[in-house]
Image (cartoon, rainbow, N blue to C red; front, side, top):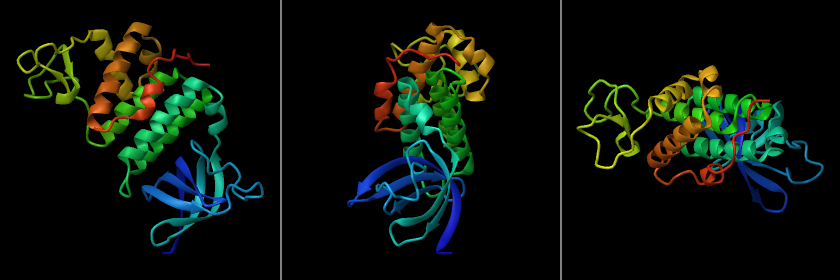
Length: 247
């Protein structure tokens, strides 16, 4: 069908000509979509702010040869304003949509869409610390993409744990026999937090100490950066900001 409709979260936009934009979206049923929103930069545009990053919309598109055309857009989730008004939420959201853009394609699953929408919603409402929301999102979306870190057995030889060495390049925890020299030792509290981040156990996550949270964030960042190869540029702006508690 040349015309189709779907729910989509806006990942990024680029200017095109004097009044148009190319919009990159992660949709629920059609994976990642790139489309032209004509006239969206004019003050009289019928789309308004519905096609800005971090927004969720019900969009109708016309299937083009190289880029689709946005015909209609109705807002489903207006998260952009609440995210952009807090620097730590904004930087975390940028890292999330950059990761989604890197991991998703036309075959992306609806679970990837729902995970991103849930993360942006939580950020906009200030439900948890932005860095924790980001860390949970990164671990869960990596798992959905087939790169779940090994936290209970050796990632290299499969020996059952417990193990105390985490090596991002090898896929997670490794036993003492497989661990390269100088591999960092991970505290059991940090491992408990990593498991909670993957499972979405927010009572455990919110109750963790700043030291354990920082240690887990460092491991999550290293793991995600390694497996995405080129790295996540937005993470550079997230790493040193203080955590914001739930509001």
